[in-house]
Image 1 (tube, rainbow, N blue to C red):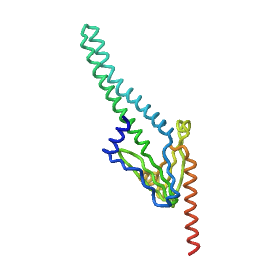
Image 2: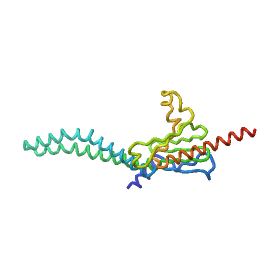
Image 3: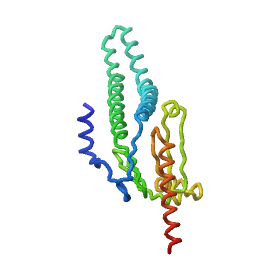
Image 4: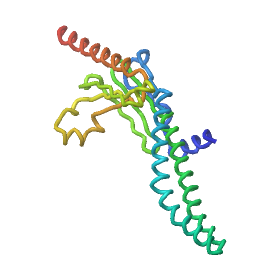
Amino acid sequence: MYKSFRAICERLLRIPHDPTPPPGDEAATRIFRAAPNSYKYLLFIWSLKTVGTVLTICLPLSVPPIIGAVTLSSKGKPWGWLLLVIPAFVLVLVIILRLFALAILRLDFEKRWYLITDRSLRIREGVVSVSEMTVNFVNVQNLSISQGPIQRILGIADLQVETAGGGSSAREQHAVQNLHVAKFRGIDNAQEVRELIQARFYGILRTLVWAILMT
């Protein structure tokens, strides 16, 4: 069923095929994907949101009809149980919406791509709103790894790549965050990826210095 849902979403949402590598040496291209445990982490977040939705929407809307049904039934009016149709409808609707959100979450996980060449990196993510970002290593300003408690248990982390222009004032940084910050989300080799980017950054830097010295 999920495969059919994925095919329909790819067709209706016109989700692009696998991304092409950014400019650079094809032989040096490395492809990274979100780790399998990243999907478990997303499932955990989805579960919390689902429980929260049930507690904040279904439960408050269910109590009055249930009380009404019990009251009418105690007064010899069995048709009062028809009031339970309301909470049942709400519960079914919430379940359908949350299952749809789960399917989108799975599709989003599968469509995350991280590509690194000898000169730049490219990140693509999203299904409803697809975003693709290419960063040249010469513009990289900072590399940082973030990891929450659940991520530590699952052995995954997020690698944040800050590029030129992202180190301005707090207000300006917030305004341009999407333009100047790239994230490798839910990878299990964040340290390896960071070292790879650093190595290729310094490789470009050495090449530029050598070219300047030779001129």
